[in-house]
Amino acid sequence: MKLAGKIAVVTGGARGIGAAIVEAYVGEGATVAIADLAKDDGEALAKNLGPKAFFVTLDVTRQDSIDAMVETVVAKGGGIDILVNNAAVFDLAPIVEVTAKSWDLLFDVNVKGLFFTLQAVARQMIAQGRGGKIINMASQAGRRGEALVSVYCATKAAVISLTQSAGLDLIKHKINVNGIAPGVVDTPMWGEVDALFAKYEKRPLGEKKRLVGEAVPFGRMGTPEDHKGAALFLASTDSDYVVAQTLNVDGGNWMS
Image 1 (cartoon, rainbow, N blue to C red):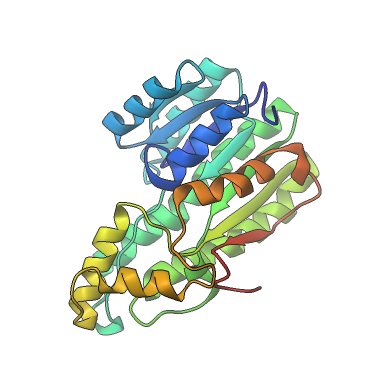
Image 2: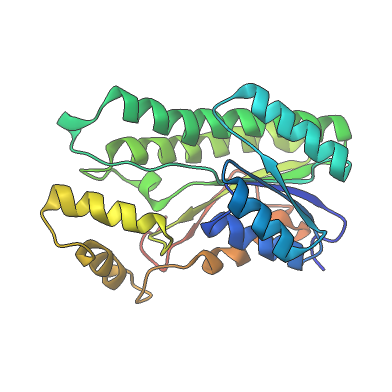
């Protein structure tokens, strides 16, 4: 087992890609903290996976919640070896309709929350003295601009940049920081995304989702399970010489 004896935290781990990564890590022997605001979903997932998984409440927009999460995981697991920064929110609108409220929410969760969770866990890893792995979930949206998705694209570009900076800074502590950039992924959130595109692009519901799936070179949208392999690779010793990289897992949508 690639992660036997490791303690992992997956933020936003109750659903979607986060839940798929939680399942993969437990399957490879890790004890995993499902760190999320979705208590019912998180506790149900932990119960389904057995004693190797447990739920911990986390609001990444609050420093006290981040600190409490780290303390809880260390108390239950004895440390933290792996962090997957997966918690994120989405919104879209034309440039002239973007609101300060939407801007603040996306940057508070996707950038500030990610960074200060990374910081708190990195401090714990440094204190432990045994290195670690930190994986930031970016997006193909962080590789380019999109007319209706300006703020979300900007947050994910920031994630890629922070992954590079943190990777270069923390590798001296044997902490590898890398990222994963999914493409279009078929999760429940895509219903909301599709509805927003339908509103602004005057499309029938479901059409945008169908079109983006057809445009993927692989031939379909991604699934949460498509991201397990990259997440396992970046969490294991197989990636010890990989530093400050963001891997595209998008069916060929973007080449970099």
